[in-house]
Length: 259
Image 1 (cartoon, rainbow, N blue to C red):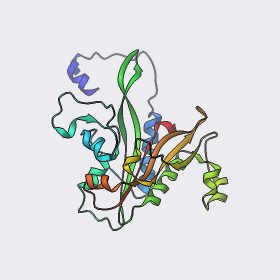
Image 2 (cartoon, rainbow, N blue to C red):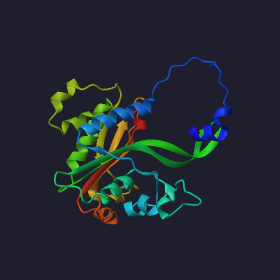
Image 3 (cartoon, rainbow, N blue to C red):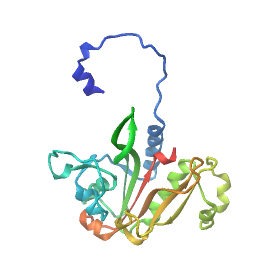
Image 4 (cartoon, helix red, strand yellow):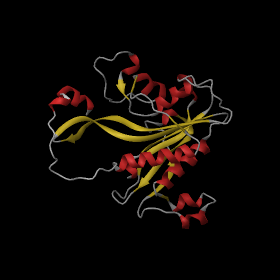
C-alpha cells in the first residue's frame, strides 16, 4: 500500500469522510499466528524471520524432494533468489548453518510462522486466475546432541492443544495422560492423530526412514482425515547439504487448516 501511495502521490490523495463506518480488527489467521508465537516462545524456541526467496537447490534438491512447480523469478539477482519458497524449512536450516558458534549443548530450538507461495492455476481472485496462492505455515527445528524427536513431537501436541483440537481416542490410548483428557478444552468435531509417513510421500525423503510422521486432522467441514503437516528426524544427507553438524528434527504444519 505504501508503494501505491508513493506512485500515486500522497499530495494527490483527496481527504473525504468514509462512506462506511467499520471497526478494525486483526485477521483471524494473523491473530492465531501471534498467539502461537507467544506460546512457542515460552517453550524455549527462538523466532526467526527468513527470506521468502531461495534457490531451487535449497528448496528441493538439498531437502531430497522432487522438483515441483513453483513461482520463479524471470531475472533473479543471483542463484540464491530463483524461486519463492514452497516450504519454510530451508530458511531454518540455513539459520542453523550460519550459527555454528552458538552452543548446542542444551539443544538449539528455532521456529518461524510465515507464508509460503504455492503454484495454483485454479486459485481465483476477482474472477482472475492468479496462478499462485499464499499458505500460512509454522515450522520449527530442534538441533542438539540428540535428534530431539520427542521434543518436536511434544511441540506438535502443544500446538494442537493451543488450537483446541483434541487427539483421537486411539492416539490418547498410547499416552499415559489418558485421565487428563477430560479436562481438555477442544472444539466439537475437531480431532487429530499421528501416523507413520508413507515412504512414497513426496516429503518423506527429507526425513530419516522410519522416523517420520504425518499429522492428520479431521474437522467438521470435511469429515475426512487430511494431512496438514509432517515431522520427524531430518535425514543425514539433508544435514550434510546444509552443513549442519548435529542431529536435528523438524515439524511443518499448515496453520490455515486449523481455523
